Structure formats: C-alpha cells, structure tokens
Image (cartoon, rainbow, N blue to C red; front, side):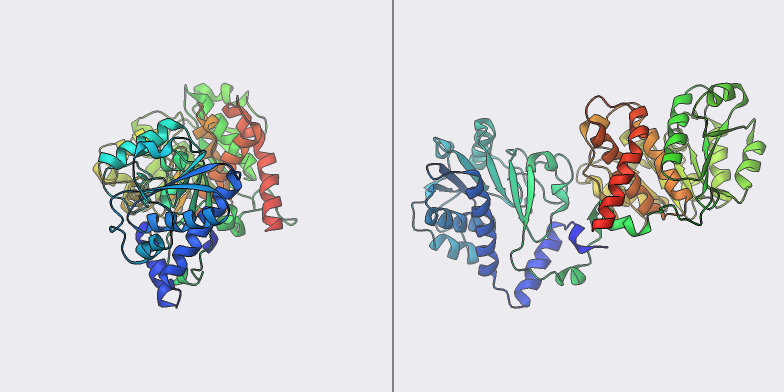
Length: 498
C-alpha cells in the first residue's frame, strides 16, 4: 500500500516519533519543525496588525504552541499566550520550547480570546482519552462560541486521534496542522468536520519508518487500488468484461434497476436482472441494455447462476426479508461466486449470522448501513462504548470472513486481515434514497470483472462520491448512475498523471 495514504493510530505515530529519534533526529528538532509548520499556517491567515492567541497545554502539543509563538513574534505578529497550569508543568522538550518563549505566559482563561483575530489550539493532542472539562473545557467552549478562526495543532483539543470522537467538547478549526501522516481520527466523524482543512507537515521523520510500523489503515484513494482497476482492453469482449447478475424483487423494483445499470456503468460486459415473473414487465420497461431473465424459484436461480460466464452477483436490494432471499444467498455462496450482499440479503440473517459467515468463500463484499450492521453483527461489532467505527468494521470483517463496507459519510471498508480504508470524498448530498443501491451495483460490476473485493469496494466507494460531487446539489440516485462516466474519465486522468 502507498505510504502517502497511510493513516496512523496515536500509538503508531508515537512509534514514528521514537523511530525518528532512534535514527538521530532529536525530539527538539521535531518540535521546532512542528511549531514552524503551525506558525507558517497562521502567517498565511493573518496580517501584521492581527493579534494571535495561542492556547497551550503542558504536553508536547503545548510545546509546539510555544515554538509557534516565538516564530510568530519574530515575524512581527502580536502574540498572547495562555498555558493550562503553571510555568513549571511542561517537561522535557516542551519545557525547552517554553524556555525559548521570551514573552509573558498568562493563565489559560476565556479572556485570552478578547481582541484576537485568530487562535491556535495547542491544548491537548491526539492521544487524549478523557473528557475535556474544568478550566480547559470552559476555554474550549468559549473558543467554539467566539467563532474565531482556529488553527489546531495535530487535532482540535477534545478530538480523539484514533476514533474522531469528541471527549466532552471541541472547538471547530479552519485548519489542522498535523505531522508526518494523518491520523484515523482526521477522517472519521465527527473529527473530520471539526478539523477543517488538514495540512500534513514534514517535520523530519524519515518515510522509511513506515516499513517498521506497517500501517494497516489508509485513506481511500486511487493510488491504493488504481493498478487493479479493470479498464477495457482492445482485445476484450463482453464476456471477458464479466457477467453480473442482480437479483430483483417483486415490489421494490427501483433498487435492483438502479443497481443493474450501475453495474453496467462500472464496466461489466453484461448484466442480467433476475426477476420474479410477476415483475418482469416492470424490469423490461427499464434500460434496454440490462437483460431480464424470469426466475420463478430457487431452481431457476441456480440454473442461471451456475453458468460459468456469470462472474459476479448482487443480492439484497428490494429482495425482501424472506426464506427465498436467504436460500438464494446461500446457494450463490455455495457455488463460489463473487458476491455483493446488501440490504435484505443481510437483514435476513439477523439472529443467525453464523449461517452466513460459515458460507462465505472467496470474493464477498457486505455493504450494510448502520441499522443492517447492528442487526447482522450484534455484539460482535455493535456500536458500544469504547468501540470506534474502524474497530467495529475490522471486527465484523474478521468474524464474517468477508470485506465489510459500513456506509456513511465516513465509509469504512475492511477485510478479514484488518486491512482498512476510510473514505472521505462523499458529499452530504449522497444521503438520498437509492444511493446505496447504486453503490452496491457499482461494486458488483467491478467484482464481476475480477477486481479483488477490497479494491472493488474502495474503487466503487470513491467513484460513488466522485460522481455525486460532479453533479452537485439536488442529486438523486438516477443522476448518480448518469454521472459515473464522467467520474470514470476523471479517474482515468488521475491515474494517467500520477
């Protein structure tokens, strides 16, 4: 996996700092570089007459704030600095950074913000594991209420660097300056919305330390899966590009219709919609490029799926929570077909998840939203205190043996080994009926072409967000399908120039 997209946990970042020191980079040099990056971000957002308020804690984040204060004063900015606790509290490199600040050090208070044009939040770092309360909580609440532009050091105080959760209270930043690599909490909600623009500063940690750390989480980006993307080939034909089967339902026909067209747009050479006979006329009235096959019962379904040219299946959207849906899922998995299971194909196994997990073999992607996730995984992956979204999805993937994609504005994808992707390109407008069906169909089209399950889930999710962004506000699921060609062109250009 490309190191540029690595997302580190707080513990992994600590290991990176330690590895840099072991390689001969002093801790003070790291702090100086971090403070310089913060100062440069502030200089870009302020002018010579602006008062900059720097809020420092007693740890290394505060040390970065002291360095930034010194450099800003040297650059001609007016600086007011407040410290949580007394001047004797900082230790080690933070104490040395504090000694380098010649200006006054005031006690942390709400009044420090008076007259400030911008504030630097350097109170607490990414490793916080308790609620921000007391004096610090009061000041952070005042910072949020003041609506000042805030530059946060590493993360806004109160944001958990691992989970993106808020410990008590946090003030939103216009920019967060972090170091070496982003943390998982920069992409997971609500942390992502509180961080503002995230700038990653090179502070002298050698990139080679990533080999030692071995990160297992990455930002979902074309550099991750682009090499495996199934672009059309001159010598190809429709069957070499994969044959996807989408199981349709009797009444909620829109879901399968959207998914089938998305599978075609995703590159599948042909798509067959398996329809109950009583709904076939509705399906045949849809897009002419989608073939419709009457499937009256389980035997018909198995005959269709047994065709060796069928390389990918989607079950669930609009299928109904029924014994028939359950049996078809198990039949498809028993044949070793690459499958995407969504919606009703997941809910039908509520309370009997081991029946599904025991049947999963090879390429299989599960695409639940939070409700379906809870019904399927229950205590294994439920959102209980202390369990973040990334941990929940990893636990679910390990339990099921499938690639699990937990949908949301911060979609998380993980495989059974714990390798994970966090997506951050989904606009808020994607919260519209049918968008999930388009995503499931798109992933099906990719997996039918032989794309590995984790890569197909990552690529489908990225294209889904890119298509929505290209359309803009007012998008509905039908528009998503129509915007996929433009998103694919954009992807091809990105890969070509990278």
